[in-house]
Image (cartoon, rainbow, N blue to C red; front, side, top):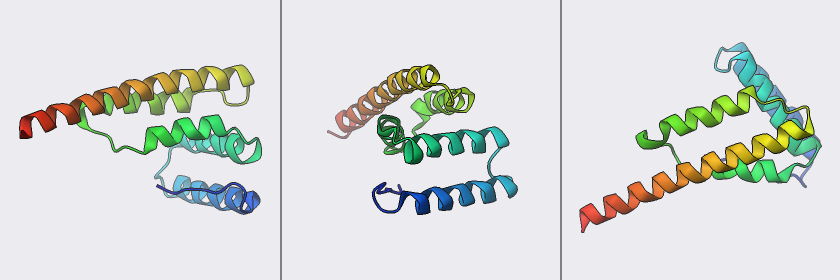
Length: 121
């Protein structure tokens, strides 16, 4: 995971992230709607300092997906891509939905780990 210190020249981070997203889209690694979503998120986090959204997304990305949570991961990604991040009410609604999905995903992953640990004992 890449940790970005927003106090350390945010304009440099913004420019570099936008460049990387552009390259990934040109290479076909990102669909146009995925690139748009990432650009909107970068704008919210770096330019508008919406750190709450950043923390929610960090919580989502800090754990790797497991088969039992793949469907939730896809729902989170689809929710992010479909969201209108240009309107404040859309952002608040997005944060609430994604945060709840991440909590459920973490609950399932924790339960899976507990089950695995019980099996090993």
